Amino acid sequence: MRIAVIDGQGGGIGRVIVEKLRHELGQSCSIIALGTNAVASSMMLKAGANEGASGENAVTYSLKRADIIAGSVAILAANSYSGELTPRMAEAIASSEAIKMLIPLNRCGIEISGVYDEPLPIQVDHLVNRVKKLYDEKKS
Image (cartoon, rainbow, N blue to C red; front, side, top):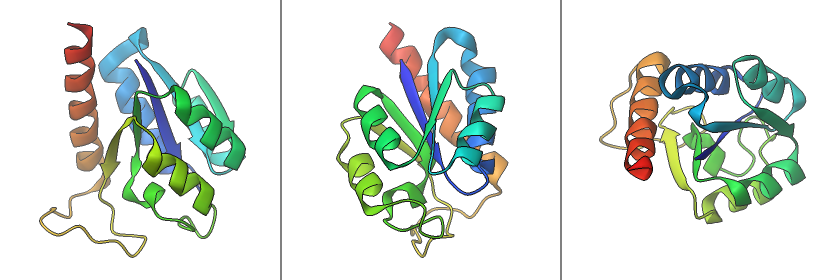
């Protein structure tokens, strides 16, 4: 299974996601860090991603090989991350056939009703548990 983790700016959310995925799934899965910039990609690589790439073309190209896309709900919003996530990136993410596992952080002007506003570590735990369940189902 190939998991693409997408983040921008300082890469903090992506770093936490990669660390927890690596802890739960070990080395049995392939994690690709896709940053809107080199700093975000670097942070996710340091957290344990197998490979990383940054920029619009790298993100749009790499998504074709992903089974799961993980990140904040902001990755679906064009011009989020202070404009770092381009409309082409948002379209590629939304159009991808990969399953999207998104953390509902209300920082990009998108609020999802019915979702509890929990601290980031708890939201990442929910995301990782769901990815692990999908991973286990695919293995069997």
